[in-house]
Length: 99
Image (cartoon, rainbow, N blue to C red):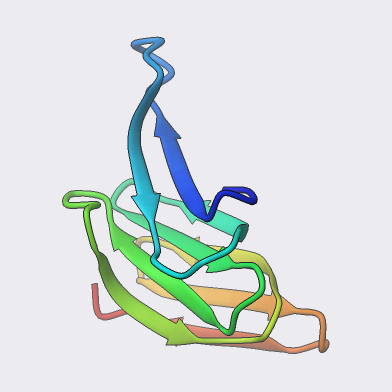
């Protein structure tokens, strides 16, 4: 994540450079990222959505969740598919993803 608006994935075992770049159109930056074995969450900065990516086919977003204006923290329980996010308004929101 960062100010470029995309998420870059690296394979540390092969010491290769970026193996994938996930880009969410219209996003200025990425504030938070959460990764599991088959799912990646990204929160734009600023923005009220969380993008859900399927890591088996990371070319497209599979779900967008309406969240806070500024999502500072993301959590994912991959065994249950539950997602949680926290923002600056002292709120916590949770979902069960369809993926």
